[in-house]
Image (cartoon, rainbow, N blue to C red):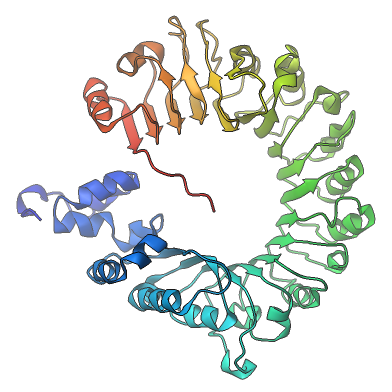
Length: 501
């Protein structure tokens, strides 16, 4: 590395403060300037957002990977294991993980393993991370060793535990003592891969009922008596599985015992009666995430009782659901899905605005389009009708191909100040010069039909421009953009494979 003396006359702490505002890719570039910059760019304070991922590629070049890791001075705080295969990890994978944890375990605060491990292997991993605060793992099976040989360490800082368990035998065997390992756990996630009568998980939830503030539970069938639980301090609940889809009595008993709930995520199709149960028993609710496929006319009148509701996430809202509904003025953020049927309803935006007049942030997922072009009229109507809207995200993640085009009128974007396009190709007309856009983000956008070097003519108030894995945007384009628009912050993430976990 270059001699650092001539470039580091800044006051103590100022360099670190500058690095806190840089995205990771720019910090990596800065770290190559000199050793001091490398230490500052990846100091312990700035490692919270950095994750070391152990993959099959590293294992294939094991010796080289370990050499690089041993020579690293970075105090990694987050680690993710994404090795290949199914079932418990094999001996080679196990030894590699243990070696890595021997190097960095004392500084690790978050451990995520997207790969199975036995209870014994899991114990050997966590014992090397005394400062662990969050753990996610898939424990596949009980180990053949005696229970007494699997005494887990007591991790007093461990508050977040997210476990996928092959079956209830893992808990019943006594080899996976969750509370013994994490006596102060407040956020718990439990998923069963194969389970007929998961009695032990109920016992676990009953024991820690008074300390849990968040619960993420996969419920495979209705034989699990979760409705008997009393979780008085629970603020966040996520239920997955079909067990509650049509059992309103079980739902009623469950939510009656959850008076402190602020967030509810129901990952199953919700009936109108189920929605009514949630709304009538959760007066403090601030965030609601539901699947609305079978909701009927006037269903959203239930939401009128939720005076604290700020975030609403649904898959679909057709206009019949909001008929007769009073304005829900507390809602500031929405996520909705739309398909071809909505594009033909030119009053849709106005009817939605009548019920949700104060929405400031909206994300629209376009899906199932028969045509390749998303009708720009729909997007324009949303922008112009929702006068309080400041942030709009349009996503084609559920479409094979989607394009938003148009914006020919000067006022097409309304009061929107931040516009995000995700997997949605983009084009713009020649006369949209008076919009209020300050932040513009293109995420996995293949085609951008606009002269990027004249982007200030289209968005005269632009202050921040970001390209994430956009096929047509190359590093040399970014260099020229930064030279052309020195007052605009331009962030660039090169084209890369988006990992799905």
